Length: 431
Image (cartoon, rainbow, N blue to C red; front, side, top):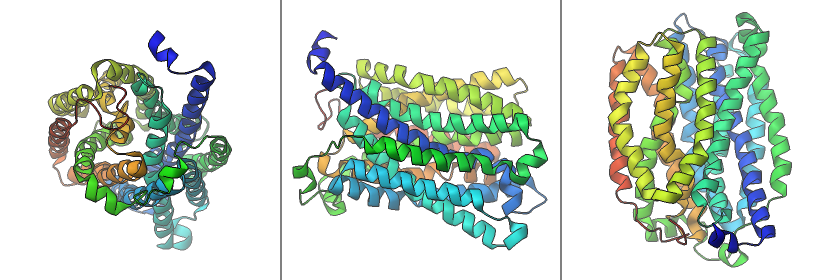
């Protein structure tokens, strides 16, 4: 620790920690706004997709949720290019403004009964804007945090990207729980679901001011590099790295969304639990999951990022089916909480260092683009479709097939993690 401390003056260390806090605080607001949709879907689905079958309603809302993910590759490309050519800070500020507008639009949308088919169309438009914003947010934030993190402790500091990402989910579900205490089921369906979107839009404006104080990490020389933000340069010189990141992110995104956003619906729609009970379980599980991230980040600093990724792939392959099968028939809320927490501990091997492992694969002039685009493509195809695939298979009487689908993708993540170098080529003064 003495050696690590000697690398930085006290002032420099404090500045870097402030930068981590500032960037991750904006990240929290972005993901709160994005996940509010998932946790409120149970209440607003009938307002936009009238149907006598609640599963069909959830399939439709999950489809719109997935559509938001399809914008992520475009967002990853646009904002990654902006970050590499015009600075990480500018990219992060634009993305938070776009998220603010999307949340405010959803909060004000009229229902199907008021304007007919235009209601779900406008909902889709708002989600596409949010998907574009989040598509750019992840890569830029991961790049920024990896560049300001302290050497020797990069795993620990980089883990705060998912601390705030999960924190956004936690705040979203916590707000839903609070609303459930003060509003009836009918009131939540009538207007209560709009409140979290208003809160998210207001919080985004606060985040904008926080990000204005951040120090830019990219140099003028780097931004003026002819390859800066170039997708041609990315695929010409770093195709193997891009494919590797794509491979393990596919499984990581799928299992992450399976045990976070989809899990609340799974407990209600499959295990037969009350919506309030499911919200309580997910609130507790997400809180522990958030707290796990720094510890798994520190573990990665000790054992190496590659080893953490291998443990993630191996354990996910072995335990996904047993955990989901047990949750399918669980009757005890406490047992459900324990099983979900166990699953999230496995996922933590990946999420705690997710952004850092990706950032280490690319040089600074294409880092935000490489991280953001690879993540967004895999996330759009596998993460964004998780709920839709799960609910569609359930509606078709083949729910167990989804468990094996997740397992296969975890095996794929393990195989791609084997391709990770033992020593990163970029940001290499660390494990």
